Image (cartoon, rainbow, N blue to C red; front, top):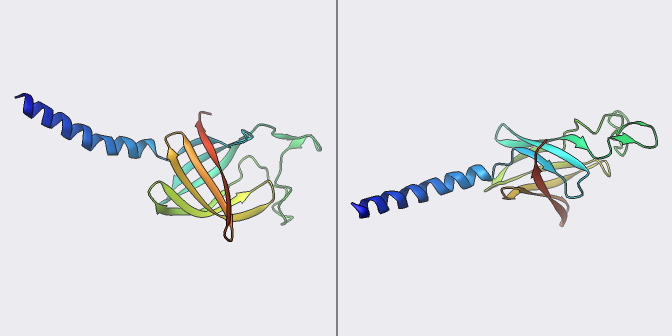
Length: 145
């Protein structure tokens, strides 16, 4: 009887762990950037992921007294759009276990880059952008609203 119980317990633990681990590595949620200056809501969209700025540490531009806008963008039509609500990810599709690849927009310089996003721990999202062979990145931390 105890052998059956141990076998069932073993089976339960080793079939439940991968599911719990996969759920824990879901990218959906709110993420605080490494500098702590913005929060991004990441959601599943189709087979990929989307990311939208939902909070800024400094939402008001001290030079204008108005909400921060995408003023580094070279396109004059886009340079007036608000940073809060700005979509950062485009074309982020699965490219491995807990990893998505596509493009990321950097409002700090107004440019888009090839990018990889991966959940490296339940509360850690690695965000990398590349120009050719040169890549840089940061780790975002899962947070609540």
